[in-house]
Length: 386
Ligand code: FAD
Image (cartoon, rainbow, N blue to C red; front, side, top):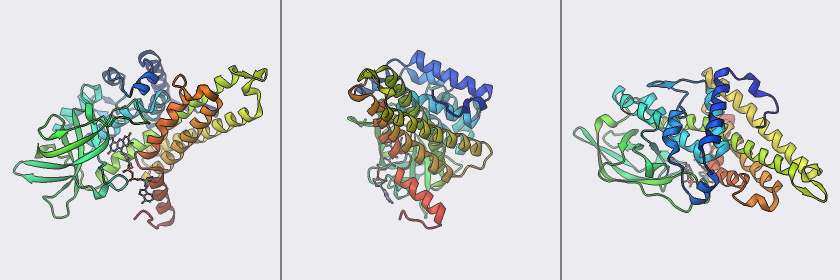
């Protein structure tokens, strides 16, 4: 895949190995992702196989997790998204949004119960933050938890939750009404508890190879020991989102690279007016622009990885990289689609699938607009989103 500034030469042997094994896994194990996309299904047989490959939270340590470098983790997200955003979303949610909060904020018992089986894919988790009336502003959430003896009672509804219909456990963020200032807390809710329903959302026109659903909570009783003890307030969910957005900043590059390579190959094969279309200046301009934008995004992601590794990364750095790289992938996959002419609108080729997926990626994990406002606030000291 495109690596115009030879960034891969800077990789360690461990990082190289992870990229190679992710590529051969996708080549060998992912059977016709385009068909899954059309059918609106996720290849669920891959869930334990991805666990066996160590694709869930490999940047964490302990509980069987290898603690690979942040660059290696980013490259893994890139390889998965080059296949499809659905695959990367599976790994992002399981790793950054479910295992990360348990690892960072969970009790020893919670870690021992959940991290090994989430790591192998024996259990599937989901992250319940968004509500029907509260998306970009989750701090206005209405889901409430009330203490009752040694239990909490949860009521509320979450929507747009990746993997909720196939999850064993949900990290549900709710306001704790047993305290005066109703702080947001994380609850580990087994989805087979009485009062939990997880209806699937059908007919999505984006991220079709990924299961999305709701979580409805009606008088759901969970033991008090299921609260994540190490965090309270919006810092809990927001710190998970920083982890997941980091992976997205890398992942989007993979989608764009795959769209670019498809367009480059097509442009050199397809002939019109007696020569390959890649020999016409207009098509070359498109390929040159795509390659340049992908390269800029790669440089940003590699620097972001270094900042994360050294502990200097701020959430605003992640906002800039997520915002830029996803917009880049959204724009460039559309241009790749153009190069393919009529064939570009079929599922036989990846660019239009990536382009449609990018509509979700542009919207979830903080919309493009919200990241603009986060950067605007950081640059001016003036907050503009309320
Ligand atoms: P809204 O917040 O209603 O925004 C609508 C529009 O208004 C957007 O363009 C937005 O940018 C703009 N806007 C909002 N506020 C402002 C402002 N202050 N200034 C200017 N413009 C503004 N959530 C989870 O919790 N867990 C998941 O696993 C998950 N998976 C998802 C999977 C899919 C396929 C999708 C589509 C979404 C998923 N989400 C998930 C939800 C996602 O994070 C939200 O959709 C997103 O945060 C936006 O919220 P909203 O859809 O309610 O849009």
